[in-house]
Amino acid sequence: MLRVLFFLAFMAQVWSQESAHAVLKKSAMRYQAAKGLDIAFQLNTINLITDDAQSYEGLLQTGLPTQFVLKTPGLELYSDGVTLWDFRPNSQQVLVKSLSDVGMRLGPSQILLQYLECEAKSMKVEKVAGESLYHIVLEPTEELRQFSEIEVWLSTKDLSPKLLKTLDYSE
Image (cartoon, rainbow, N blue to C red; front, side, top):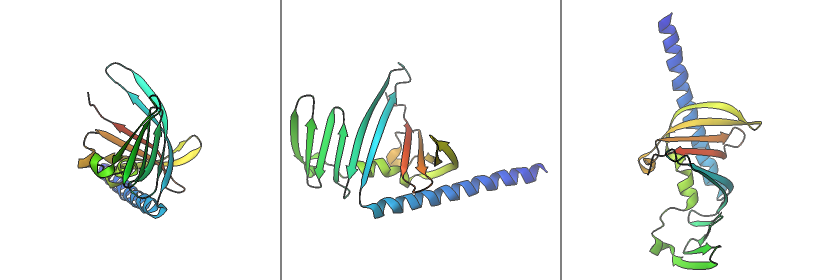
């Protein structure tokens, strides 16, 4: 009896990982087909040593991989794929740079969506604010090794990202 229960628990985990992999793959295909994103986001940071917490909202709009607008309270970045305009609202300063001079190989949407390359550890469906979401716990890739934990919540309707949680223990 105990062997049967162990086997069923093992098979449920294997099924969850395979299902999570399929969900991530479909989400990646959806992003590639969209040719752009409009994402309003909130970034929350908590320093576990000092217990200081910060939160701010932003907007990310993308076209092709290096074409984007990224707006946060203290910074606005605009890129047409060739040039980067770095606007600082507080000082009313604009710095204009070539993307090649900045060394930007990846745009913000590519960085944001790197979780799509991670392997899924587990997945479950949760209700968040009345919306049904896939909650997927991920194994960070080599590129995301600064994070000890990565979790993503995707809409069960259209597989769009609703929440991305990362944990790092950087100083």
